Length: 436
Image (cartoon, rainbow, N blue to C red; front, side):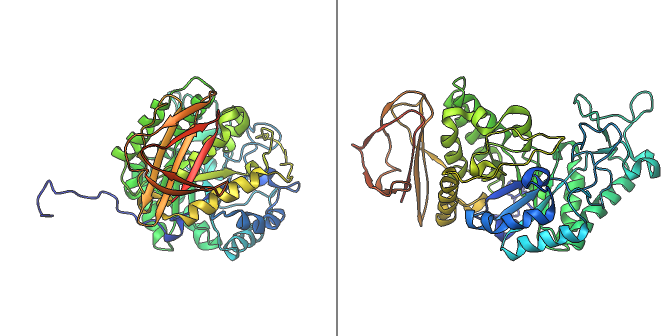
């Protein structure tokens, strides 16, 4: 290939993923609700359990002090930041936070911190010091993000170089001071991408970092972010599981991702997170009888799965957003279900994240409006997955030959041989994960 030719293929991705995200599974902690105490110190006791579950990356919701002016509820939203270089005293102090980060590292896990760069609380320390760093409306007043009901925050103006310098410095602060491993960037697409590109470059001078954008666009993967949210995947799966969506929309999502995103791009698949749980409903409300199918697809299909705290014990409630509402930790069989799926992801290289994993290959079947079937295979084997995304029993035959071979049912440990005559009956909302 003549690389000097102007039309020779060029890879626009300039970032390098940290090696530790290759087979990673992410776990989100809402410190306020994670324990009865709601503190960094109380969270320490859960870390061995999360390690045993198979978690690799801990994503902590914002830890900064919360604004008082125009606060929502009695405790406010953690996304209304009062001081970017401070710690919310409800959770502990800076030393407590450093101890939590160190303990996560001691377990062989990594930690990313939720960062709110688009807006701040009305009484952030910058409001009086640098009012010119804030966006103003037609009357010259500070204002929340347009078109949203975020009345407890006001928007920054990223045309100001000094604001960018301060925000980047604050992000470097937490990497240097507390040794965190990256950031989850709240409403990342509402902040100019060129800012994130420079921040990524700066942070990489300190240590390899993992950057997650709460957004869903291709350009963010080139030079700034390792991973973005698979919002579309979540919405399509929700519609299918609620009986008013079609599998064809899922094909469209996977086609869109495979053809238009770079191979390095990692999409985060999830059945719950803090927003979904608080405002739209628990994963049980959102996915009903299809919940386990959605979870299986999030672990075996393309993407890095997220577990929101409480999912692994089937927590049945919407956690309050502006008040204390601790998770009721209990024993539940679904924890073993998650543990097995995590172990499978780590065992089979075909299920790795980003460019390390195998491409999903659609396996056509005789019930295309009800059953999704695909393989992910590489030189080390892989998986053949079937999901009955309907309320009807289905008897299914498969076309093509890519799926031929001998497999082990991952959950039942029964052997199965798949050839041209292979047929399977599958119950409503049931699934098969066969390992080669």
